[in-house]
Image (cartoon, rainbow, N blue to C red; front, side):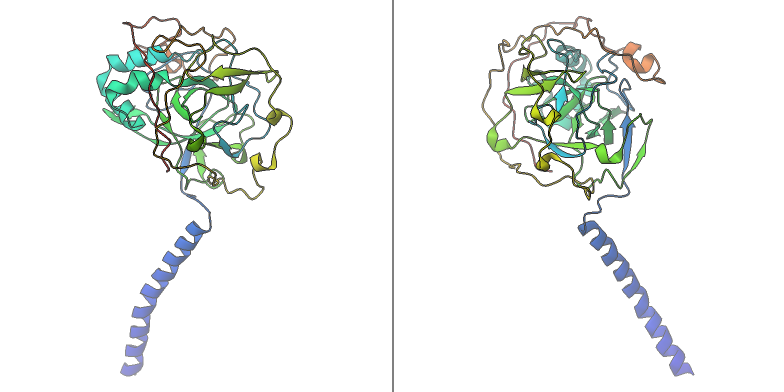
Length: 350
């Protein structure tokens, strides 16, 4: 009897680690199968809402009821025609005021520059190369806030109609209504398997959340963006690093508005993970560009859009940028700001 019990005890002692190993293998298999990070929580941020931990507060940078891109979801290249929108010859995302605010708040400037991977002294040049646009799809990003002297980060989906500044590879870099820096989302996050918090909006669907992939760095930075007006009635070109005055004449809508190539369509089995593309890691720094007719170092004032809609219901006036320290279109910067051109490094592979 003692011998039998001893054998059973030895069997149980071996079975426990084996069971643990099996569980670990199951988890690893699930990860390798493309299920993504099912434990991620993505924060929804509506048009007009700065969201948690804003760097500052800015009113009237977004537009409600923007006509969304016909086919959303999956991964889109940053240079896709019609991916972004805007009001022709107008913009309310003021780059000079953002620079002025950061220069007046050195602690925030250090955290902001750290997220973008640049020295604080390079903020004016970096911001001068960004282009103001409106999102036309609910877009997944990593949103970086500011708390207790440090930058914070977390996955967020920005509602279509939100104003952002995009870099030379077509990737959102700044959220206009709060100044928060943005970076690409982690590849492991699955938009379909993740949970969501924050206020939702009509028409929100997990399957329609879009990731934006940088333009292939071997092609260099984008010189002109093809945008669509908020009502979805016309297209127009906006030279990179300009804010409206240099926009081209009205044109027909991009072909993506009426027909969607199969490569641009999300697969029915799309897990919400970032799809592989032709992005080249690259280490080269694309050369300087002369976008449109903008005079380097002295961007002209940007015209506020009179058609911008108020914030979504539930957003308090202070959240919309009317509190102390907020910036509003039309407010003059505290001092002249030089915005010289700069080279933009190729996007890093994440």
